[in-house]
Image (cartoon, rainbow, N blue to C red; front, top):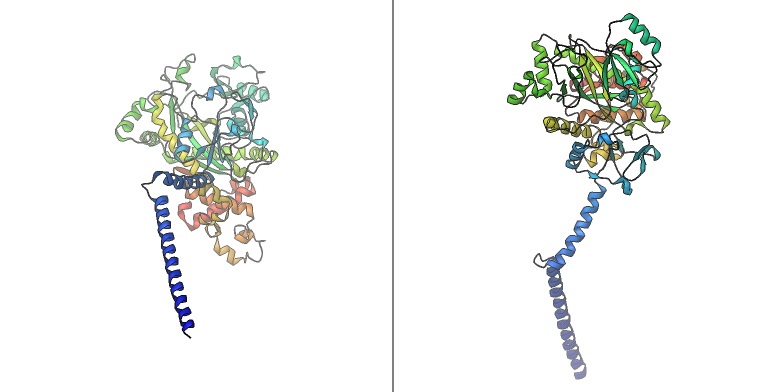
Length: 522
């Protein structure tokens, strides 16, 4: 019995000693862990801190690279390489785009090119060909030119397909228009002619006897001999136009300002040998050189567009009527181009949703302020070429920023969400559903046969739904743009409605329905 008690006491002593050892070891471990934690995360200890920070930076950079858009800029021809893309570069950089080095096989999201990206241009720097049609485009990639845009930008093509419009001066491409041209000269023997290079370089005033009928590099256009003048000077009137879609067509005019270029010398007394009287060329007067513009611009900072509108209003002209004519000219010419764009895109196996077009329509006015389209510039210079024109820089920067926003490139989320489930945060079926009365009245959920069911969601195909969502997005991001088409001016024009494609009819009907529900869409 005594022995058992002693054993129990011995066990107790042994157990008690073991506990102390365990407690001491645990305490040491806790202290060591605390010290280790302090060493690693102590801001005063530089070496371990650097290790942890570098790991965090790697993760952050990786996330940014995945969620950063890449911008590819291309300018090839020698006469374009004077910094034409400087403003674009500055705006894209400000919008947190990274520049893509495509020659090193870097990926890209947004391409802005001076030249057409669908033709073979040999890039002198590394001797490879610039032609994006060699590879399929990813669904989200954006390009600033449509295939076949030459139908709009080439003088000869543009005049050929729009010759019937009242906004185009009589024009003839030789030798194919030789017969029509001879008839025009017979009917208008005193008409003066402008000889132009089909590639938009060179303007000369000639008489009928000097026409070269077999020259295929030029075309002839009736000369506007009684132009509208400001302070005695002839001028052209540049309007920036954004086409976000063909099939269907959506066209916007940049409404913040316009571009004026005045001839160097006063128009009268007229001298056909002095081209500075009637041709706008390098060294032309900026608008603030003109007395009419100087005061309002220098003292009150009014945009040139507002100063011009005030000037013609004082002269007794209807400002709204003028813009109605200008906008109609832009819309009709854009619509007349659509067929060739669609045809070219299909031939290249492209969907037109990849593309947009920012162009400049150049107008002149006769003495009665009737507008005529002189040309459409596919790649207008958006970087001031001289310090005298630096005042235009803010116009160009706003224009580019608004354009990138409009086509969905304002942020990584806006750009990528068009093709994933997050799209519903910006534009969903509730946003694009219209005409609830017709949908219920004709039970369009049961049958789509009735014509009034065409806009009801069960009857709208996926492609049209996509276009409606894109139109809704554009409405959200219009900024300084004004929608010209679809627009209320065409909602009730039956003759015009019947002349456009089914896709454009659906688009026009949808915008009209949105207008009836919310006048902000009108």
